[in-house]
Length: 250
Length: 250
Image (cartoon, each protein chain N blue to C red):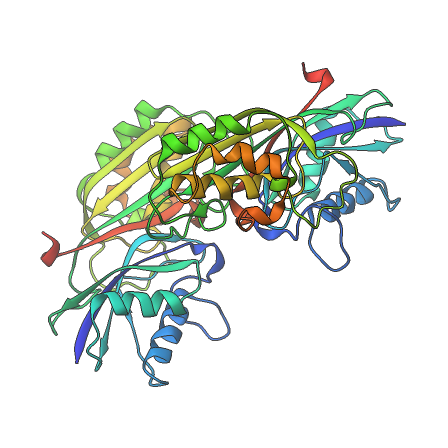
């Protein structure tokens, strides 16, 4: 058997998230349908670096699957992209050792969140950024970002519904925020992310930018480990799984 | 009766074009549905500066309608945007003299066409630009653009199916082309445009950029007045009705 890694991108607008579900259009569903067709009806199961929710996008999600076929990289890519719908694209194929696993071998993930900071919505951005109407103090947001960097227990900033067992400790290597014109870009690089973590964090950063919280409150919020202390999870359409890094990539 | 002008934007991806059609989702259909609701069931007909095809976008389309209601501008805007779907937005409302007509009073229109000039498609651009894979000589394209400026008979560059009666003479005030990264932006400002004119012209400009035609051929093509001499109409998703100008705007 050959183990194959694919780097894929998708526009999350038309999918009910990544994970396969009966009667729903999902990223996993479309990928497995295409692979099963290539394998003449034999079902092929894929494994991803992690799931993404309905409406969340990916610039560089990673999946793997196993195949008995011996086909060159370029042909895999072409066969898959011919069968896949046009909101889902395979960017890169790699042959991996049998031990590789798209989820367990992740060493770093990067997420980005885009905010469209204008009083009025833009029809062309409605599925690709979160329209936030109020003025923001970027300096305060940047200070708050720096308090999030490092190793912390992120219980306060993850969904109470999370089924994750074990430690909620994660390390954020980079948390930055930049404004260009009306677009605000948040970048998060970390060892791993809890369920809804980026969307909850950006919600709090927007509170800080509005002056509803102080940047220094972040430390106390982290220490209290209580999801109830912070606001709602902000919308999915601003969120992009940007890149997944493995040992081999270093 | 009050005559009201609206400047609207829409993402053409989800519409079967501008013009109302039974059982199809159209821009005119959605606008008239919202207006009829505001007028408690009395049907309100709108007039646009012109139609746009399926998949074509608008940053600044203009429409007008008549109403017996005396409502302030801001309230019209809010009432309409509350009722309209989120891929269609009213940007501006203006009260006009009774003689105003959104189609007959146009003095200038601006269209833009966006090309994504990369070997591979981008899932986030598939509905918003035309993916053209081949290298282009921008200098040659710019020369060809300059041959298109001025007053010409554009029969060669308009759909043979066009129902337009009368002269095919139009004046193009500006035809420019600029490349930024992988994105190429074509700007056309003119007195008026024939059916499919921008999409046929950009197709020929891409032929010129590929070296399949010379820029100087444009003059001969215009003179021959024969649609058969040039290639197919390129896809709608790169096209944006950018702005419509009226006497009052000058």
